[in-house]
Length: 201
Image (cartoon, rainbow, N blue to C red; front, side, top):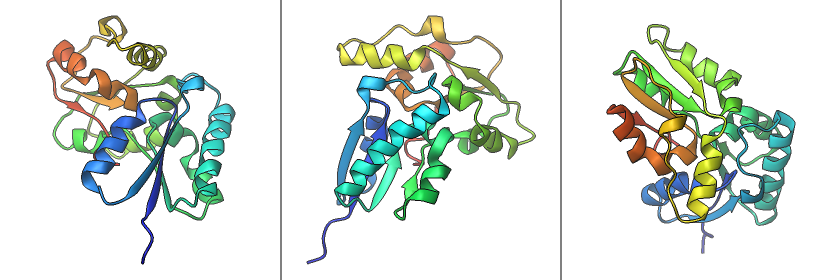
């Protein structure tokens, strides 16, 4: 009998559960293993080397249990180290990135909210550069992911209005998987279409 395909899903904390949920909806026949590094969440303000070290530790654990593929359910981890990990490991490593392309097909003034490390990353800049006719605003959110992580683990959604920038936008792109937990609040605040990358991953 052919053994079941094993997929490891990693995030700095609880944000990747949104990606895991999308994976299960689309491919329920696979076996999933989830690691959330809640102890060190969030990653968005950490150094690139610390992020790489912590993600590598998780991928090594996946390797030990014979994983067939790894999904980084974390925009920051993807932005910082997905390419480095792909060069190190033989199994596929799938990253999670902001849904820039779907938004850019229909809108011209997107707001991208993300962690500071994602905001400054070459990967995000390369994604945005593919759409020179679209005027993106990238807004780093230094505290939002951490507040969501703390609030949800205590069983209470945060109030996020103080974190969100005001401006002339026509859609919002969620550049951190934690933000999907407060998507309805973001939609109510901006009254604009909101995009995230879970389904695309």
